[in-house]
Length: 226
Image 1 (spheres, rainbow, N blue to C red):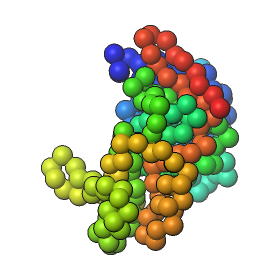
Image 2 (image 1 turned 180 degrees about the vertical axis):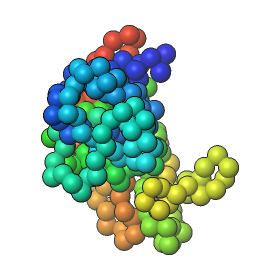
Image 3 (image 1 turned 90 degrees about the vertical axis):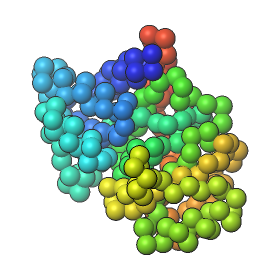
């Protein structure tokens, strides 16, 4: 059921893509469906001259695999539309992202996009952000001091590790600390706090970024806008 919801949301996002656009490609399982659908549309010539920028090595590789043209971010000044998933979203379309570890690239590309389209399954809609652990990317050489500081602030930090118990390293060569907060009652205040700590590169709170959220549920797509 969840995979079907992801698929219909991803397919619905194609309506926002036109020929000659620069398209940002998100990271994660839902974004992967969109990348494949976009590749099919280009292959079938429903869309022409679409150029893409990817938020991760994995998305870059998948895009190339399905025949999309991927260009470096440094070669463009803006992005027409970015389509990406989310780990959570609330009624104000605030998001938690970064479960796949690409939050820094995702936020940069979202910030350069004229439209940021979020695609999700129904389980991602929450009354209050925070049940999903909030990712924080930190410079590796300072990861333990930062973790200790976050713990002292009562933010319940956990150093991310992979399935083998090895410390997770992002595409940028950094570590990720996940904050087990349960509820984030004041996301703006938390954002300001995290941004004030030296050594934190960025965090997974995406406040005010989403133009539209497309949520798949029970065989249909519900559209949320700000």
